[in-house]
Amino acid sequence: MEVVHSIEEIRREVRNLRNRSATIGFVPTMGNLHAGHLSLVKDAAASCGAVVVSIYVNPMQFGPTEDFSTYPRTLEQDLELLREAGTITVFQPDDEAMYPHGTTGQTFVEVPLMGEMLCGAARPGHFRGVSTVVARLLNIVQPDLAVFGKKDYQQLAIIRRMVADLAIPVEIVGGETIRAEDGLALSSRNRYLTAEQRRQAPCLYASLLEAAEQVRAGRQAFAQIEQAALQELRGCGFQPDYVSIRRQQDLQPAGAGDRVLVVLAAARLGQARLIDNVEIVL
Ligand code: PAF
Image (tube, rainbow, N blue to C red; front, top):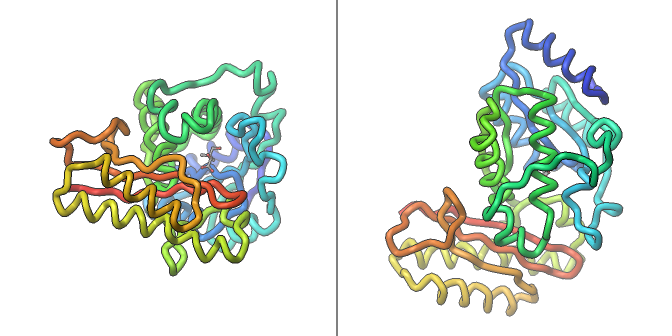
């Protein structure tokens, strides 16, 4: 496995892989890898001859009071996991390579509307940081396909839109959410939970499943379903930001005629802000 740090090196590496006629699959990450990430690597490997994984904790997507400085950085362990998963190349740039003009002098990419709602409302500037770094990574690596987890549903929808709007020649694939046995979606931020909060945490997925069940059963009183899920989350000790039933494609609020939906939630539990979602096709 090659681990490279500069744009020149990763471009050379990708060129070599292409000369061996491999299609390139790409999985961007912020490191601290777990089974969820490895599943994305597996998805990329299933359709591509070579897989590139990037590890970069992107300062631009963290708000001033967020956990950028404490975000878990576990490079050695990550590289070991990637080696076992059969990754061919790891791109691990530093801030100088990613933001030569600094994060405030950098040209940015912003997807309107979709980037401002839901998590975008609670985390101003977050999705601008995500779209900008992903656009730059896609331009650097130039993969055929890139895989993003469905757990970050809004992020995936925004990236799909950005790629379409900017005609970036890459196929975007959504990877399934990987869960612990009790239903909690795997996330690097789960490590912020105390043992007691960890026991409460599966309530998030349970509330979403319950809401999705109601929608599948034909109930169209979406606001009431959302309110009931919010109540349930508060009862489990969460401070919810939102529970919302949306259209999958553009994340606009669902109307009575919509059939391809997703119920999304974000909620705080102690130091952790957890997100999750359940897709619904009627
Ligand atoms: O989902 C993530 O880990 C990050 O938001 C991403 C896509 C790697 C961009 O920094």
